[in-house]
Length: 233
Ligand code: CA
Image 1 (cartoon, rainbow, N blue to C red):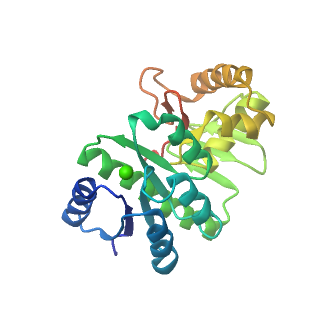
Image 2 (image 1 turned 120 degrees about the vertical axis):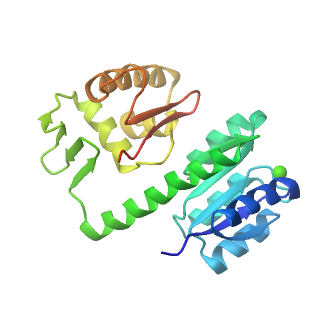
Image 3 (image 1 turned 180 degrees about the horizontal axis):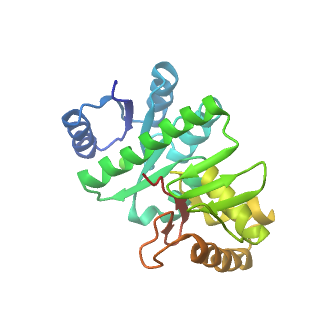
């Protein structure tokens, strides 16, 4: 199987070199773009499988690049941002980015994020083939048509909100969903109060699906950002 083609958008040549050296060492194919305009051009002409996107670009905001790409493609985008750009990171996720890496990052971290995205790509492909009405992930199963969820063959007794949350996370497995994205989908608004309620409902849901509260298997917390459902082997 061909390794995916990765578009590396980064104006800082030392970071760009670190990334491309890593990709090369792990048999990924790659393209590079040092600016927003060239990123959009490369993305549209080569249709890469994954985009690694620096948010601080010389000619435009990385969020703008995401918005442009999203008008024609769902290609997975991993945002790379400096720690000082935390709110930009959330804006980027809300604009349609899939995941993020915070600078400085390690090579292992980069490779791990790429693997998450690759699993998501495989899942998206198999889902579109099967038109899945049943979702399975590890021991978790959701029968969307029946509106029931199971863990280890046993039906879970979820409240309507918990069930909605579980469906939303599962439909986006591998993708980081921001607090405001989730509250918009669940309650149609994203006030501070909704985010506080979200924490309460999420705690309730986790109590029902996670075997060990200390090391959650299915739902990962991104402090100050949101949540992600992980693909469980
Ligand atoms: Ca930069």
